[in-house]
Image (cartoon, rainbow, N blue to C red; front, side, top):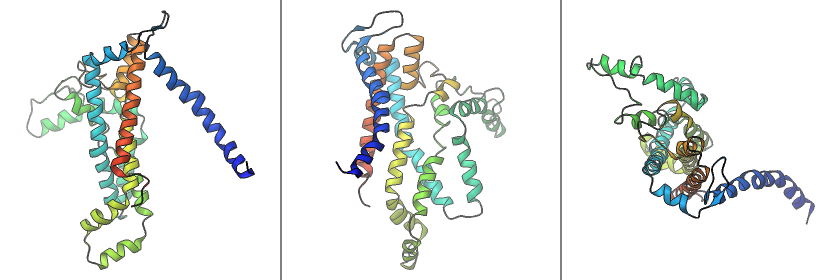
Length: 288
């Protein structure tokens, strides 16, 4: 082994060891105990696929799974589209670009718990501005408890994160800044208008940035829990339940760690499948 290869191996060792002993060991433990009856105060007992059968027969799990898939789809399309559109608008460095970028970034700077608390007050039925604004425009009797109403809870929870695509906008803006101005000047000389330049030049060149942003947006829905706890807590009923919150409740409230780990395995598989589909759609790491 050459000296160069030895240095490469040496620098890779810390990261590899961290992955093997922290992440990989935890994944193996979660996968193994997902086939067991594991409760605090009781012996761990192998039960085979019983936990997975219980999950598939659970209405709460099916609702959480459906909500997660819907949120992944919305984040991968609407959320990403908002971020890309914002980047295309503000990349021209107009007078409003800096202030717009700062305001758009604020919700992403706040912690998820703080953001959840903020929206809990915004949608508050007693003093929240949402009800007050709707009342101001003619419906004086309008008074909806957004997070407690089964017809509005899903929409209210979704709006706490869907429009705030600052991370996507930053990725797209950075990629746009790296594109040579000669390309845009040549397109202008050829008579391309703004829409044609965005659709036929900028968006294709943003393929990798959009794909990366889509992966980040989709996988963020696989760890969204604190906002739900601060707003709807998965209710009313199971209307806004998702898999991370279900895992937490199953383990900490129901004292059923085996069932929670089975749900965790499914969550990991959803993440892997989502990343694979996004890579396939955007042809990541392939030349434009």
